[in-house]
Length: 280
Image 1 (cartoon, one colour):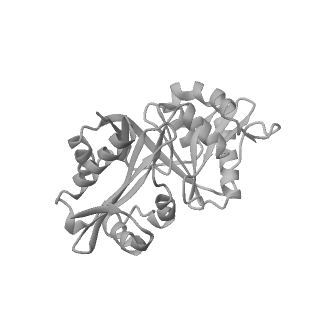
Image 2 (spheres, rainbow, N blue to C red):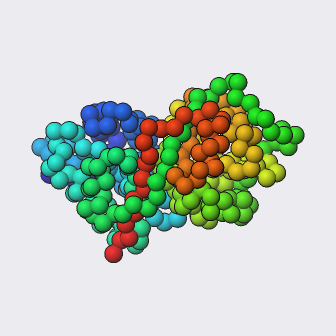
Image 3 (cartoon, rainbow, N blue to C red):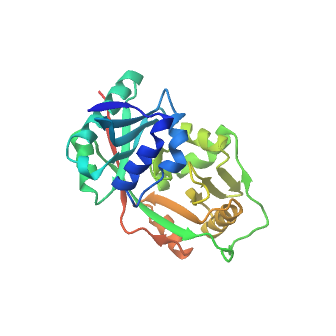
C-alpha cells in the first residue's frame, strides 16, 4: 500500500473515489487545485495499491496555526482495511514535523465510523453545531432600519474589536463550508483580509465562502438586529449569484437558532460535532 502526495494527473481518479465513497458530499471538483496549491504546509494525500487509487485525505493549516483534517475518502471495497488509520498516522507525522500542537476534524453526530476512527487516535468531542439553510430569494427583506448601510471591515484590529466580544455567544468556532475556524485574533484578521466582515452601527455580519461561492454563501456570525443582518446577507449572496445561505452555530446558541428559524431558515436533519486532539 502506497501513501503519496496527490498530483494534478490524479484528479479524475480522485473524483471517482469521492463519487463512490461520499456520493452525497462531493466538493473535490471545486477545491482540487486549491488543495494542490496548499503545499508545503498543507498536504493532499492519496493511498493506492497495485496502481489503483483507493482513498485520499487533506491536512490543512488554519490561520491560528492549528491543523484541520478534511476530505477523508475511502472507496467502499477498501473500507475496513486500515487505510483511514494510515492517513491519520500521516496527519500526526506532519503535525510533529511542523510543530503543530492541535488538530481537529468534524463529522456528523451520527457517523459512528468517522467518530470511532478519530477517537482511536485520541480525538475527543469539543463542540456540537446545528446547521441551517435557506434559499436566496428576492422576497427576503428586513424589518430593520436601513438608513445606515453595511460597510466592509478590512483592518485586522477593527475586525477583532467587533467580533471577539461575540465569542461568548457564538462559541469557539466560526464555520464556512464545514471548515471550523478557531474563533480568535488570527481568524478575525484572516476574515477581514478576505473582506468577509461587515458592520453597520451595532449590526455585524460575517459572510463568505471558502469555496463554491455560487452554491452557497456562509453566514459565519451575525449580531445586532438579526432580521437586518440576515436580509443584508441574503442581498449580498444574491448579488454574488449564490443559490442559498448556510449558517452553522453552536448548539448552545439558542438565540441565533431562534433568529434563523424566524428568518425562514430550515434546520439540517442532524448536528455536527468538532473533535480535537493535542499532539504530543
